[in-house]
Image 1 (cartoon, rainbow, N blue to C red):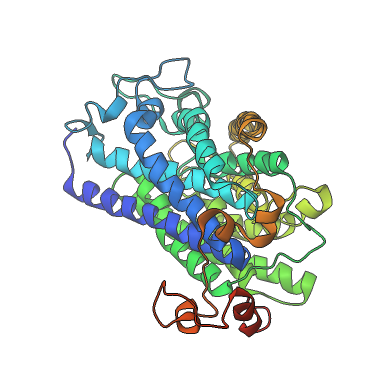
Image 2 (image 1 turned 45 degrees about the vertical axis):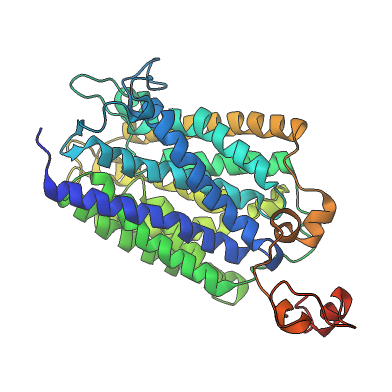
Length: 445
């Protein structure tokens, strides 16, 4: 098949949009943490961006998209170092473009997990975990879900043997990351003072900015998964917008009824819940189906985020309540709402298709959930028992930014003006750290 310049341009743009989602996630998560650990939270996303990119080039793309090497479970080693991709073709795209697009999915999937362990994880331990998890969990699962059989290649078992539907990564990205987040939250344990103390977001404008960037980038995530500039991309695009908007509204309604207030955090969280839920379904449902998915996802996820208090696991930024629950909802609802007006020869239960598709969606969803949870727990437990995964109590109380990164996100009292007027200069007589703290406004130390 010949390379199509329009398809190539669209997927290059989509790759950049999906890349933007990781800095957007850093802002979203960073705003939701306490001020003393915002930089650490954002660094976990940026660290994943650097590390996973290198691993993807070295062997990740090969494990995910090379010809199947073991019963649909993992790709081979024929594309190590992106061997053969510089002149290869994938559909109507240069293979380098396809590899770049899929790279961005790998990056953000790893970054998503970090929200479950905010305020208490060592950065070095996180980076080790990120590399091992990407290798043992994401790359194989991406092969299961995204590697379709070609004329000369054999792909993953979910895509080709089970033939469950996942248009843009509800299982490989969101269920996968959500299950991993739950496992890590259990391995690391609760934050000091949780749930007795308040852990409110320190900067809601950052949260809204991050959510907006995620929403924007998600059009590349979903519509780009058509891997062509065609009608399917257009359907995925409009479905993404409809579901996300509906989820914002339903989350706010739940808040208003339950708490008597509709909040900015709720609006941002509802948007992400809608984006998560429509991801697997955006290429198999019509806009009415997308509306239903969005309404249900917003409501279900708004209720699910409270489960951590009832069940006692400290999922800091609701990775489980939004990504695991939202991903499951979106994937399973395909079995009810898929229609052959969008994807040929495929109907969900509500369109006369019976229970077969729903069963396939359930098998795919819970297989990924179970595999990710078990392997993540083992990886996290080994790191905990060897180098340690959690910062010490003093660092957690003082703030990870200062203790681990020797930085602070906010300079409430300028050291340069109070001390000497010259950055790095000695403090004037009578000025010391204690007097600086006493000069700071209340609550701004």
